[in-house]
Image (tube, rainbow, N blue to C red; front, side):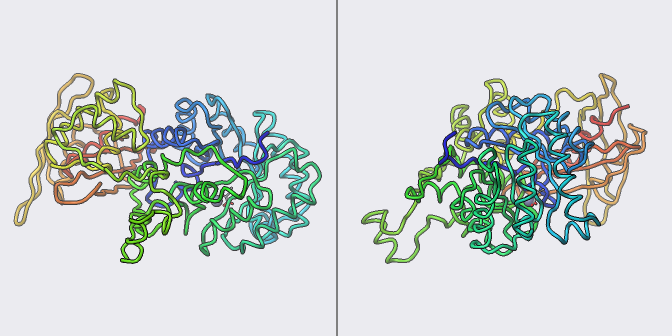
Length: 499
Ligand code: KIV
Ligand code: ZN
């Protein structure tokens, strides 16, 4: 094995996606997973399969869609979790179960009401159990950042002996100082028998703004896997940003460690994550912020014009910053759309590209300028052709001094229905009209509407979660018309409910 290679484990789709309001649907997750594959990550943590049927299904679909990176599924140190993770990974070409348990005294005492010996036994048992299902097992010692080093070393030694191929040392609460975290990794490298049989991994949270520094301290002391997310997204203050570690390794050649990250894809995938998760990137964010390479002071501009090296430690081209960024319009051809999508990390089959191009033309008819976020959304949208319930037409009116009303024509497996209803707004009226046709009780549990870019002619994205009996289904719609987007999302949900 190349001892100087740092493996990149991307957890945007698991730890990153835990951010409230940033949940992705399966189609969006597949789009992102494929982009991560072309970015060159070594492993993709695709989800936590026991947590929901949606997560289980996403791991299945990502496993089918992606070839080279290892697909990883999270579990607690519980047999049922491990079995579910293994089942979700059945189609992955390279698969890994990520199982673990809290090892800090506060986790042991308050979360598990247990003791160190019992936790150590449970850790070993979980790894051995996971090994029966897959060869590649990663163990995480949750809250390792606050775990006593001597006990942590015993746990790490025991799980490696049980067959763990990777051992993850998370600073779950983002508490550690870089020196402290680096010393922890060094302690393990020096005190664990058999440490060379596994890869030690960093997993740092950014609560005190030290995730990148801690991750680098881990690498400098022997860790050879880094767990990261695009744009540093993640719960609370987020996780270590992939782009920061990748560019530190590239800029500091003297460290003598390297990665397989194709850094020129970084900017595109950063935009993609921001757009799919509706999470703007702060302008001064390192590497991918809009001001990251913008020199405004006169002294800097003068220096950069004379020689970029005077003030730039990274060539923006190395990150894929596209200085010739173009805005597409109705006159842009198929090739321009393909080029733009590929710059953003999206590679589509000819057939899929043709479909997206048709949608692009429809959108360009309604909106003068099509931005990156618009086309990323078109590329990720689920096509509704295979749905058995389709909307033929919809009319809604509302305004000041009038009662909102909507009428709708729906095709259910070839049979035509129409209905009209009122509501407290045009969306409510349109949904009430469909309810008259589809008589089963369906409750809307979640309903979010977000603009994609800007302007009153903007596209809007609607995410919806509905419940019907025991079933919970997610739906998505996107349109320049807010009522149409909402109905698309509702009908998308209806199509997913099983009889
Ligand atoms: O932060 C953490 O401890 C985690 C583990 C579940 C790996 O995300
Ligand atoms: Zn985490």
